[in-house]
Length: 74
Image (cartoon, rainbow, N blue to C red; front, side, top):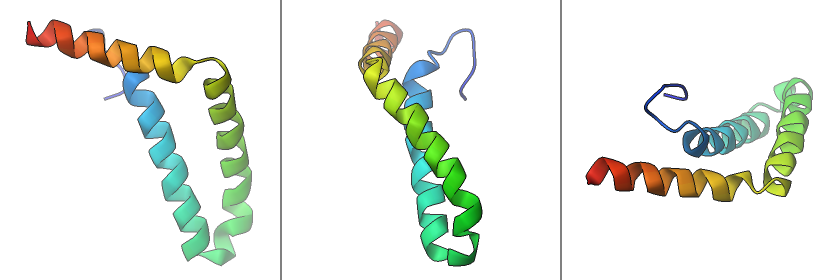
């Protein structure tokens, strides 16, 4: 789903990234014995999410999604 020649991947990758972060956060809460293993991954994901926010990638992804569906519907 996140790769393809005819599908814009940026607009799908950001929500997938956020979903992955949410799932790992809940897993760390539900399984405290795993928190020490999960936390470094969450820290790295947060670092990448901050980079995405600083680069205005989210806005570009939303524009990409709008254009994709506009073209598909016409």
